[in-house]
Structures are given as structure tokens and as C-alpha cells.
Image (cartoon, rainbow, N blue to C red; front, side, top):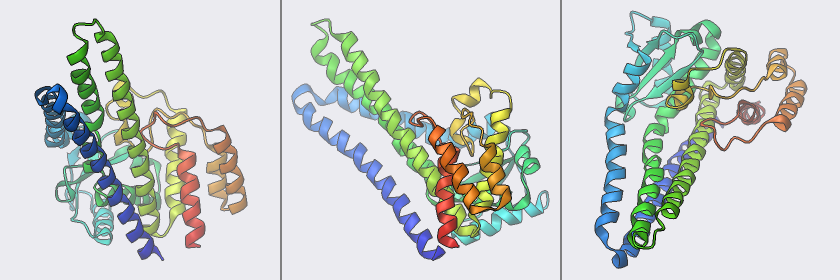
Length: 318
């Protein structure tokens, strides 16, 4: 059952990438068709600029991440247990062994990055190794392997062209007709609104990929409850810790296992998980879901929603 579920999951993840690519291609095609009237030069510049920015981000992103997080690569002899854990998970996933990095940071976190499956890396915070027992660390690492397996960095990179493209396209096509009529402010507001819609799509994709990575971890380890406990522990620590730095709240939010801006206390869910009582867990999850705010502006799904999805897999595997 797990093998079939993993195949289905990987197929859905791949289809999601193709749909996003098709959406972007469709927008470009529609604009190019429209530009037969208004001129192709400005539109070509807008699309080219958007693609150029994203390609630059894709090219230098891994180096910037290593620099900003101060991630240090570790070899097998330096961290044999951690290395073997990642190596075993990569083998199960059928991907090359990613480079392993350690970040000296007390926050419980791990993240995957890189341009492709062959150039991927996984960074583990020392805070994660201190906060979680070995089975939960393995479940979190399996989640990150899932991101690499599903090519999530590429998916988000492709999608991130959308807000920029929408902004520039509306700006270029609108100002062409409004320069003489004094309507530039309205065009600019329209461009900002289009960019906001594009950002909502990217955030939705980011949350969707988190669910896929969670499911991958659940199926490949066969123990969804380990990731559930790990997520609950991580989120609770973030909920009672001081607010994260502004740099974390903005540029680096997508590189956290759970969104560090989320301030959701899940004490009852964590207690239910530790009790091992399925009925108590169901009740705690339902109670937290009723209190959950909207998540449209979050990079990650609310932890309680992720736990509920993992709980469904737990019942399926049972």
C-alpha cells in the first residue's frame, strides 16, 4: 500500500509542477496574442526581466542560503549517525545522497535546498537535534528528502516568476494607453493587485508541497506519528519562544519545517499524541481546527491541518 501511495503522491506532485508551468505559459501566450495590437517589445521586456530575475535567483540561491544560514557541510566521519540516516532515506527515495549541512542555531529546524536532485543539500539545525528524539529527527529528514524527491525547489522557482510577470505585464500594457490620460496610478494599483494574486498562488503552492512532503515522510518511514510528534514539538517550541527575527519572518520563512510566524499553541494535541489514545487525538485535532485562523498568507499549512492530514495516513496504514 505504501509503495502505491508513494507512486500516486509523486505523480500528483509532478502534475502540480506541470499545471503551474502551463498556467505561466498560458499567461505569456495570452499576453503575446494581445500584444499584436499594443506591441510586442514592452511585453517581451517584461517577460524577459521576470524570467531573468528568477533564473538569477535559481543560479545563486544555494550559495546565498549557505551564506545567510552559515551552514557548514559535514562528512560521514563527522556525523556518522546523521549521515547514515539521510543516506538511508535518500536510498529509499531513489535519489542521490544530498550534501549534509549543520547550522549552529537553537531553533528546531531542517530544510532542503539546491537547484536539482543532483545538487541538493539538507541543512539540520543543532536545535532540532537537541529538541527531538532520533525517530522524530528521521521523520523530519524524510520530509526534507520528500521536497528533493518532488523537485519542490524547481516548482517554487518556476512559480515565483508569476507575481513578477503579472506585475510587469499589467504595468507595461496599462501605461501604454494611460500615459496621456493620467491614469498611471490606477494602472500601478492594478499591477500591485495582480502581483498580490500571483503571490497568493505561490503561497498556495508552497503549502501544497508541504503536505506532499509530509505524506512522503509518513509513507517512506511507515510511522506518521513520528512526524506528528516532531511537528507538534517544533510548533509548541516556536509558540512559547520569543518572536523570530524580522529576517526570518520575511526572506527565510519558506526554509522552516513549520512557519516561524505561526503562533499556534497545540498543547492539547501534543499531549494527545504522547498519550497514544486515537480518540483523544481526534478530539484534540477537531478542537484546534475550529480555532485555526485563515492560512492564505502563510508559507506553510497550519500545523494542526498538517497533523490532521498525517492522522488520516496513520489510520490508513493501520
